[in-house]
Length: 163
Length: 163
DNA sequence: TTGCATCCGGTACCTGGGTACAGGCTTACC
DNA sequence: GGTAAGCCTGTACCCAGGTACCGGATGCAA
Image 1 (spheres, rainbow over the protein chains, first blue to last red):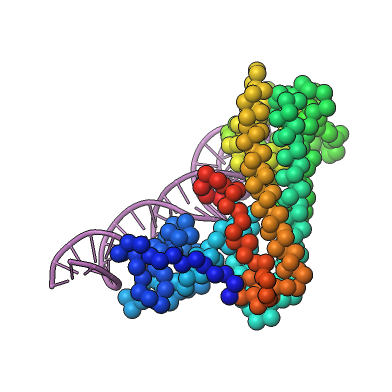
Image 2: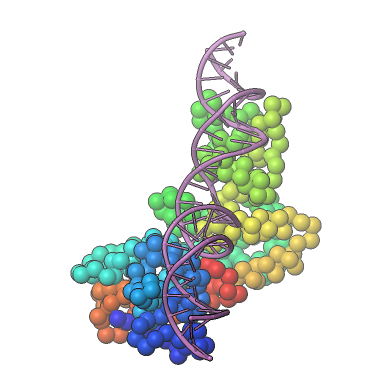
């Protein structure tokens, strides 16, 4: 397992989990910076597998859960939906996933490249705007106006799916 | 006005708008690849200004509306919310917007740079996955596994706002 | 002037990604 | 054993960004 979470020693008396038992929802939520409800939401969505439980039914998470949540958050910020993340994680846990994982990775690279290209284009435009050559988004009076970044971006969703 | 829409001659008998009157909702929607409802939604949201009307109350859009919709769609794909787009467009139409527009552009550049950095990081990871060095997202057995792209991405939303 | 496509406003609904709340049970320290 | 923090399930709600549907009015060509 490569996702090694940094499990800090618990601080308050309430937050100390018994040795070896696992992290409680509050601990995981705090360390990962997410809401407790979000943990259960992710469990429902299949992003987190069902953790073990205490005798009383409280969830006890393995310590690498925090790192996993960071993976999820990073992937989300990069434009992957929760379904895609779930799928990727699921794929990553199967027996001989190599070919499948590779294929998904190849597809994702194309998407990522398209996004980078779009962002780079708009970044260029923004820079030129900052360089005071533009005074308006729609009524710019400057000569060789950079604003029509309109033409970019059509590659991000090549299949025509809405953004 | 720099947004020059390519106004194709109308094709069917139903879709011919009277000369000079402007484009009808259906024409705009079709040419821009959006739903008619979306046009009215954007109008409510302030992204499209209220078009002129026929005597009977039907909307008649200026021809550059199609190009404007392409701007909106491009900006959206790049992670701008409709509110942000509306604000930018609005700013662009004011009397002396230069300083304001520049400031917004500067702020956006930082965001865009962060996103590009994130995407570049994940792209690298994906490439390495494709290079067959990884067989799993969460249980990879390869030596110097690239998968913890977990650490990236925290710069995209520096103010802690959710993704 | 009829007939059909299109458009109108209004309202309700949908998906994705969460959050909040209620009412009750556990945990853990004293 | 008492007590407060924390957790449980279930359900409802929120926001963004659209979409769908309704009953009725318009546009326009034949």
